[in-house]
Structure formats: structure tokens, C-alpha cells
Amino acid sequence: MTDTSPKPFVFVLMPFDDSFSDVYELGIKPACIDAGAYAERVDEQIFSESILQRIYNQIAKADVVISDMTSRNPNVFYETGYAHALGKNVILLTHNSDDIPFDLKHYPHIVYGGSIRDLKPELSKRVRWAIANPTENDSPLSPLLEFFHEGKPLVGSPSIDVQSNQGHLWLIRLKLDIHNPSENRVEPQDFRVAFVTSNRIPRSQSQHDEPLTSIKLPKGGYIHLPDEAYSLLPGGWESIHIELKADDELSCGDTENIILRVFTYSGTIDIPFSIKVT
Image 1: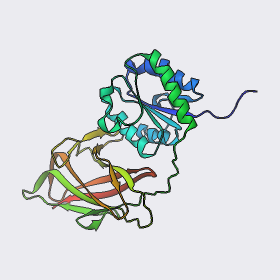
Image 2: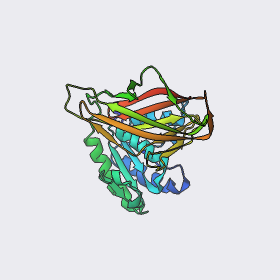
Image 3: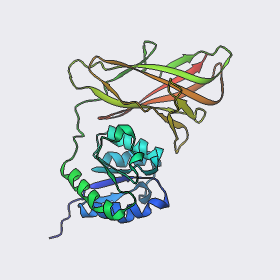
Image 4: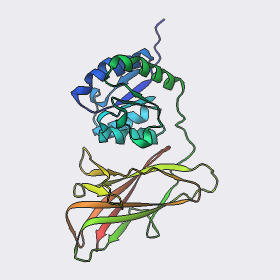
């Protein structure tokens, strides 16, 4: 009898570039079929929401996520980080091992070196194993984190005053303190953060003047991605330092809306606030 049960879903993250077509069509998709799954990229789907929202949705639904890290595409890096934050079973691929970032090299990855013939059997084996060993996405941890600016909690969309001595401002310096208030759990709370800004603030850097990854969003604005991953034990504290760089001068009285986006294993939370130049 024909098996009518739904097949496991593999969502594929890779650059939208014709040079990747053979890798996807001749390597990744057949490997998933051999493993008893079906694979899709977002550009094969029909949807009404924004492409970024669709990618979030499909990563959340996927049984397995495959990420081709070749060429260090920033969108693929960000989406892969989101999949890891959700606790998904992620299989990393790359043409060149140098394209795997240092802090991801401990994750299983396949270096196929341009050989689709070598990629297909190895990937099929990894996908089959991932399906048979699903990750535990129902973690009891919830995003129990508190965020503060100068001792004041970031709740209720607060406004933060940013002082300017000359009456205008190009660089917005923010220091946010994070607290894990849990008293009953011994597990640390692992998380990453990002900052979402308007089109007026397209660049960012760390307190050490190192540029951060800044990605333009499909519906406008930018998301800025610090490299740090944080782990806070119950009762622990941590600080985030970031400098947001405006395209033009922010004058006294100007207000900019910002979202602090927090990625945890149990989900993503947005914490909106605004800055006002005083």
C-alpha cells in the first residue's frame, strides 16, 4: 500500500544565485528525497507575507534546516542563527571550510568542494539521522530575561534620552544591562540579540569600533547583528554595548524607534523603545 503519511520537511537556506542551482537541484533535493524527506527553498513557495516573515515561519515549521554557508552570505548567516536559536536540527554545507565562522565550526558540517557527487550521499545520511533524532524544541525555558538602561527597565516602550553637546548627533551609544531573574532553574538562559532600526540608521559598530553585520530589511529599516552569544545563569547579569550610526544628523528633539530583538531557544521576543536627542 502507498504510504500517505506526511514526509519530514527540510527547509533550505542558501544564496539566491544561479551558481547554486545545480547544488540545490542535483545535490540537496535528491539527497532529501533519498532520506525520505522533501526539501524547499523560499523562492519555490507562494506566499502573501513578507519574505523575511515567510523565512521565519518556514524555519519554525521545518523538521530539519540545511544551510549552505558558501560565500558567507549575511542573510544565510542570520537565518542560520535564527534556526539555531529555535533549537532546530541544522546541517551546514560549504564549498570551502573557511566559509564556516569560527563559532560554528563545532557544529557538524559537510565540505563538498564543488563535487555534487560527493555531497549527495553524505547529505542523505545526515538528513536521515536528523529525522531519526529530532531536537527537543519544547524546552521549558521561556524568555525570562530583564533588560535595563541606566537602571530603568525596558518595559512599556520607554523613551531613552541621548545627549548631544553640539545640538546634533551622528553616533548613538547604548549600554543595556541584562538580568536573568530566575530563582528556580539551574539551567542558563542562552540568547543572542539584534537591533532593528529605521532607514535613517544603516550602520552599527561595537564599543571597540568593530563594524557589526547590518542587513537591510525587505519592508524597510535595518537589523544589526552583534557577534556575541550570551549565557546567563539564574541571578546573573550581562551588559550589551552597541553604537548605531545615523546617515545624517539627528538634531535635538529628534526621536528614533528601535526594537531590541532577543533570540532564545524557546522563541523570539521584541522589546521596543525609542531614543530622543536632548
